[in-house]
Amino acid sequence: MTYAKLAKPSVLTQPVYEPGKPIEYVARELGLDPAGIIKLASNENPFGPSPLAVAAAKRALDQGELYPDGGCFELRQKLAAKWGLGADQFVIGNGSNELIELLAHAFVGQGDEVVMGAPAFVVYKLATLLFGAKPVEVPLRNWVHDLPAMAAAVTPRTKLVYVCAPNNPTGTTNSPAELIAFVRALPAHVIAVIDEAYAEYLETAPDFRPLIAEGRLVVCLRTFSKIYGLASLRVGYAYGSAELCGLLNRVRQPFNVNAIAQAAAVAALDDHAFAAKCARDNRAGLRQLEDGCRRLGLEVVPSVANFLLVRVGHGAKVFNYLQARGVIVRPVASYGLPEWIRITVGTAAQNERLLAELPAALR
Ligand SMILES: *Cc1c(COP(=O)(O)O)cnc(C)c1O
Image (tube, rainbow, N blue to C red; front, side):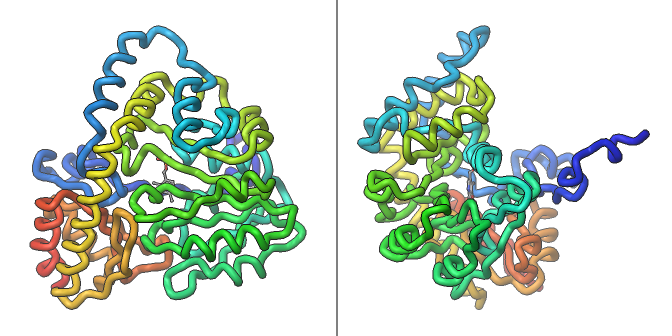
């Protein structure tokens, strides 16, 4: 007997997610000093976590023998106050990746369809396939979600429609008015899922709360992994109707988010100055990268997020060259963009180093 014969068919055909390589891994693989490596591959915050979040996480560690609050009471209270919603309108996840999986758990099965952009965050597709359903990928148009085409791709079997705003890996977004009109026009049996992982980087993010209040089926996903600098701790949240949150809570593990992450997230929400500074510095870093790439004659996709898609010719070759020099970026051939790389906005010094290494990598 083999395990494969016993496994569910969806597991055997499941593609494997390829994460950005950790610094230590690249250092070992290439015999480099980890201290000299910079990682601009996973859209992490180059300014680290907020010091308030770090202090709170350290305090929480002292009570590491206790189970966390499975209901994330304090964090949901904090979010409720921030958003002017009920605490029962939030579900906290082990990263927003878990929330994508919980949505599939609760709503998606064999015979169902899930509509998504292409290229868009690959986890929508992975979660759909894992639950035996069909991903319906709608190509972007001019680098943004083709919302009319996505609406046209909806069938009676469609359960979820994912819109990533701003989108990963393009860094682009549809306008708030377009997004809101799109959600309003969806048929009643379809749940709109808006992935707002990078919304904190926008000058003005769309506000879906009126649609939630109207009873539209829309749920928004946020994360503490990006502007809040807590990717390692794994915490994100969904907000939407209390009914939806009740269903998602049924399918999650009782203690899905650890106490250290909860404490850090609560403190991070209080550090407005830190988040505001990160957004400002990110905008300056984006300009630095865009200008630098254009000076090298490279095409870029204008970004409103914390990363930049750059056309370098042979993405894999440039990626390998840079990596050997201790600069890790993201090849995006798996997103159907073999000529491009995705560069996370780093500190000014990191951006400068990337731009200094790039000309030789292009040759
Ligand atoms: C980074 C990212 C997330 C965040 O995932 P976490 O599990 O919260 O770390 C979610 N969606 C998109 C599009 C992302 O790029």
